[in-house]
Length: 243
Ligand SMILES: O=C(O)CCC(=O)C(=O)O
Image 1 (cartoon, rainbow, N blue to C red):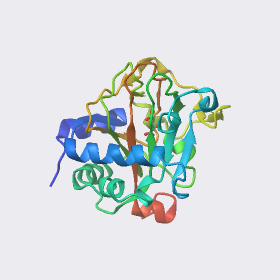
Image 2 (image 1 turned 135 degrees about the vertical axis):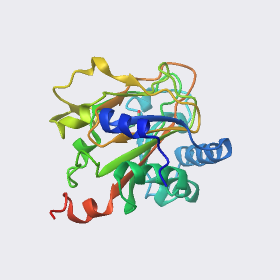
Image 3 (image 1 turned 60 degrees about the vertical axis):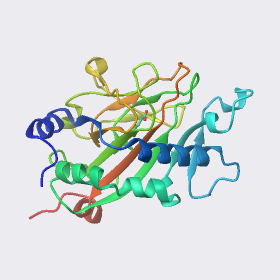
Image 4 (image 1 turned 90 degrees about the vertical axis):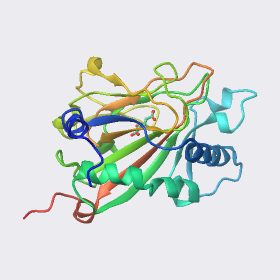
């Protein structure tokens, strides 16, 4: 049964993203936030969680390890609460509809922490600029990410910004930056739309949609959990099957 209205489906097709809004309950989001904080605070962190610290972490005196953490990756592989979120029926129902198939698998997850006062930016990029092994397709998409707001996410504390329609250009050239991030080339960023969400609110984006986020200079932290899914046929072949 379709869970999106025709207007929502049309928005995703045209813009390459959908600001869905509230989807998850406050208990679910608090539980996920607690697990994220525990993993970001752990000194002897589980080796399977990839942790990246803020670039200037060494100069942040008196700041906890949690608040020096910039990114956690593959959290669902070690944590049951986040694994449950990755299998959440409400998220999967939307993802399956956007991908026009029931045969969808979890591909990866990442948490972008954006601590208060010093959370740094995420440069403008397409997810498919990083994942070169799978052809992204345009419509339907082969790869879709659900971005879950753990905190109140505003323009001031570094919400994600999306460039409408940019997915239609396919995979664009990216340049490596000094910060281990890729920077997309040749895109007019002036039309970017802020994705403002309450805790438990979600957005969905196509893997070719250009997006990024600004630093967080506010006293309000901004954690987001990005859950990425892939069509099984695209993952198997790495490209669109020929009929
Ligand atoms: O959370 C952010 O600031 C960026 C997230 C992102 O790049 C993604 O979900 O693909």
